[in-house]
Image (tube, rainbow, N blue to C red; front, side, top):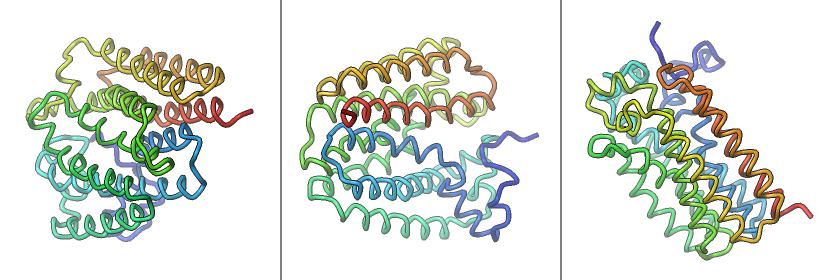
Length: 297
């Protein structure tokens, strides 16, 4: 049986073929990545203690749209590499369910929607949002030139920690920068787990990753990434004035993270996918910690 991360036999199977392919291209059937993009935004909004419900709604919409746009860019650039990897060869472009022209047109629609969302923010947020497009466009090429594409993904996926603070306060302060660094470490952890799904195919395809870089030392670096992430997020919370409840809930999240890594089977692709998806709960736990430490009186 071919291993794939595309959900099979779900409600989207009832959709027309082209619509289903566009849905898969934007990963709307796989929401974990959207949550992982969204939570750094929500962390920053909550930690700023200045965000309105409107900002939360705009960031939620923006995360869905821009995660889809990022995946579309990635699949356009990687369409030939994806055809060489078991997990990804069934995606819309390598399987030729969509043409390159259709994917590019769809990308244009998503970017226009993303710009419409970004236009609702202040000028500093607009500038930061525009700057993030450089990271989004460059990321797909990183797996060809560095053993650390997961670090570049971290720079890209956690940009919302800076953008959220800027949207809420019209500044970028130390807690946001530290939170951004913590998010980067978190992404190094979860995306290294994710990369282990493809490490055998990646060798023949010439794809670089931290999963290959660390070789047989599979778990120790991932433990370190999660510990560093929790430490930096703890510092960010303390810098922003979060109380003891933040630290207490965050300690629980850290314990959950380490137990997850302990139970992880790096050589079993289905377990790698399972542990990767569990990071949505880690992101939610960190958000709960920030809310507990800043909004509960």
